[in-house]
Image (cartoon, rainbow, N blue to C red; front, side):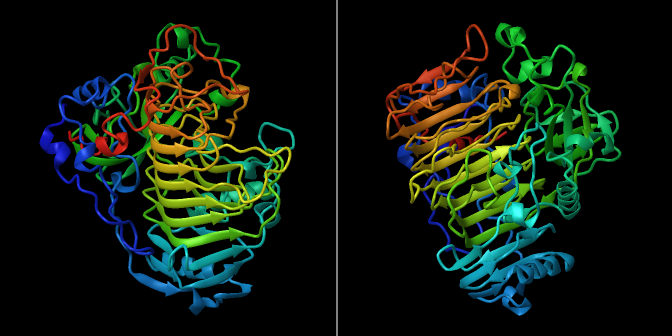
Length: 558
């Protein structure tokens, strides 16, 4: 469907942000100068608007984020003040128990906002939001500080890797503010305490526990509506899991990589970490049910084929409509740990969360900043990672889909990096798809596509001092699946570092990026032959119109 001039122009003027601590502010949108006219609109955008949900290189991400990318979400009424539960704003006592009691009470009363007035609150334990509809709101990131004194290894215990060795899974999981549903969180902590490996995803290693609601008839990527065999358990508003199982020939993985001779010739069987991520699981809310026709709030991310045993199933009950706003989480400053030995001074993590958010939140002196672990349709807006330097400023893994990170900043480290440490950046891995990073400034780090074949993700309108390195275990398989788009990216130090991706990413788009050069971390394509990648306006950052790919897609209407 092509966009009309009216659709582009409507509502294009930027809207001023709301004050801190008041929920989502209206996000700024392109000015009229960003709207491509017939003469300036590039061929890639012409192609895209003709087939917005099925373009071979550009994914549709126009509904990424909480409540399909809403600029303002519901503001639940204030039901508690943490001071009434014993929290002290002068840092004199441990306020974590008081904050957690206030959050639990709010949840048990049906939800609401828990306010944290201005001050510095000492936090000797982790903060857990486990009820849907609960918001923890400070007075603004410059006015409310939670000072975290202990790390997750001390609070919970060592969280070892399921792949052996002495790696700490706190290097890529968990947060000192942790949003996850109560039952899911309790089972996870119990497993860690018992030195067992807890499942991290929507079903993880407990997949047999989940119920099939119905099977799904064949459909195509980009379809909003599918036909099911039994709609009796489905209704508008229910969140279900679309599950696609791979076959012996790994044709599902080949499809995620764009198909064709390259993926067909690739060796998949020895990629044990990658194959542990399938079946592919995509949580989605149902928009309507009419007979056996079920419409979702987002279009299908992949084809649905008979050989993949397509089903709609139950899933871990997600945390919904919960958030963190208007505060700084600062850990006591300790040296950054050697690579993969993080103790767990982690920031804010969303796990098994859907339609949740963070807004105006700063994390400082953390091992890992903001995490999305099997989290979908969440928004991180006006977030910052700063202080002594971190391993993963942002991590997105274990089948995290349709998330939006916008107006973000990774600040330059305040102390030199200790020997043996690692810096990634905006991370995505583990078959995660249709996530967006938009309007960001990275004063350090890189575009960390961390193997595990993430696909159909967008990074747009970002400035980066590209001085990090990507990671990823060889058993996790390819760096990229199909339909990655890097759109208008300014690289301030000229390093390639997975910003220009046309030589390594299949069916990808590199549009409007700075001229870059290779450095010591040089990657080779995972797939042989023609990658069907596209390059436009190379060496001309910010030259491509529309300037912001995500915001332009927001104007695409069915």
